[in-house]
View 1 (tube, rainbow, N blue to C red):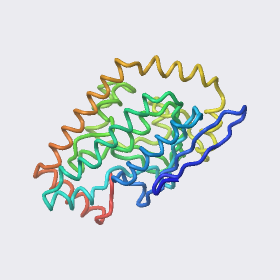
View 2 (view 1 turned 90 degrees about the vertical axis):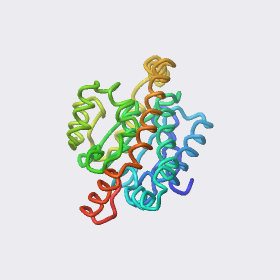
View 3 (view 1 turned 60 degrees about the vertical axis):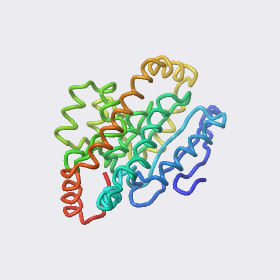
Length: 260
């Protein structure tokens, strides 16, 4: 177990082995450097094992995204870009890694999946959501540039036009709406159990071969280039006066404790 990501193994029906990674960072699993670093370490450990299935889950909220309070404080101190460099590149690396891994990546999520944390859902091969799960960008409210694959990966999943409309409208999509959009597989009151059932239900070799063909090297390079563009845009936006104003307004509205 790492400090902010719990690691255990699950034996699935038929003998398939699964590694379960549970985000346990506190504060609704805000994407801060410690959590992201521990997730990378957990993925390293998972890849070193024979398990061909990785289940990624969280608690009452999967993840509330980036720590707006942390970004705001750093920006006030003139360290906004420095802090962003400790967060955004780690998230982008994880998203790129999930689509490239020769493992079936399965997400089981409850509650909020907001801001950059949605990239973990976009990169999953299967996803099961609780009825209360939702995804919302929040970028227009805070002033950040999108990260986590909202412009790099999401258009591959649902099309560029739909991705752009979602980001610009800042709509909140429910669990069922996410299934209807093709971003989740099922809705269940017990998403962790249902996710394991679905992971065990098919021929893993065929599934991984399919994943490798879809996310071939050319497509992965394209995604990685666009993830880097997201990082560059985020670093530019975090230092802009209107972004500081957006963060301030957002924190005033939510009481200074929110993430996105």
